Amino acid sequence: MFIDRVVVRVAAGTGGSGAASFRREKFVPMGGPDGGEGGRGGDVIVIGDRNLTTLLDYTYRDSWSAERGNHGEGSNRTGRSGKDINLPVPPGTIVRNLDTGAFIGEVLEHGQELIVAKGGRGGKGNAFFATSTHQSPREWQPGEEGEARTLELELRLIADVGLVGQPNAGKSTLLSVISAARPKIADYPFTTLAPNLGVVPLSDHRTFVVADIPGIIEGAHEGKGLGLQFLRHIERTRILAFLIPIDAMDWQAEYDQLRKEIALYSATLAAKPHCVVFSKLDLLGEEYVPAIEAPGAFGIYSISAAARTGLDTLLAAWWSELLELRRDEPVAVTEDDGA
View (cartoon, rainbow, N blue to C red):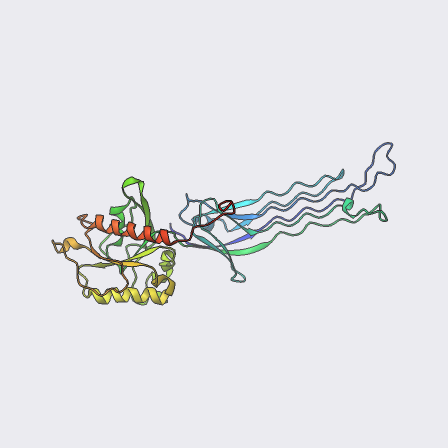
């Protein structure tokens, strides 16, 4: 089951309290205070895990707590810090504070960590309060409480190419042919009920990721159909491919409607590089590229996923466009690079 939005309650560990203790040893009549500090409470950490593709696990358990710190002890012994608790999520997960709506952060890579609730500081023991004029303090501090929050986790898939089209445009068939993904394919609308990802292999060990989302219909940006529920999954794609079946009633109208829905949902998404792909070319039995006005498109292609025609040209065009985008991306410079 594909789950891309969950609500969880997290609580970091409370810090341990400081100790009020005095040194008691034979032949040391004025031992003085020796109460140690309490241990720090454990943090709650969201960590990226590329082996996950859904937030399903958090529908079974929605409350998570880190370990509290131990109390301080005599002989200036600090209490043991509480263990952190890690919450693994798929890369592409956004974390928000549900109570305030504040954006906490996002996890984009495998192994990336995001502290979503900090553990409480341990309290000071009475040894900390000793001074030349206050040599026998009995003060000690309780540990601070750890942060407790209600979080909203939202998954937005990370892909290089996003397939956009009306129901039964051939998106799932195309994905199944060019990758090892096996989405459900049938001859009725809304066969795809959840996004699918596929890794497309090319020669020389080159690969890129393609995302297929449920069909977009008119009014999708307002929540009609399944569009609004899954349009966010192509927000992180580098390029968009608008699929139009060759047997559509009006190619231009269908393209314009898809572009309109994307623009109404997100101007940033609409500004991404895109191409037009006419699918189901096997229905004509011949190669044909319909005339269509697609300003800004980097290419117009005709393919048949069933007959596997036109795919090499399409994949080469996608790869070429992805390379151009990667060249334009700023390169992160570390402090050591300029040394």
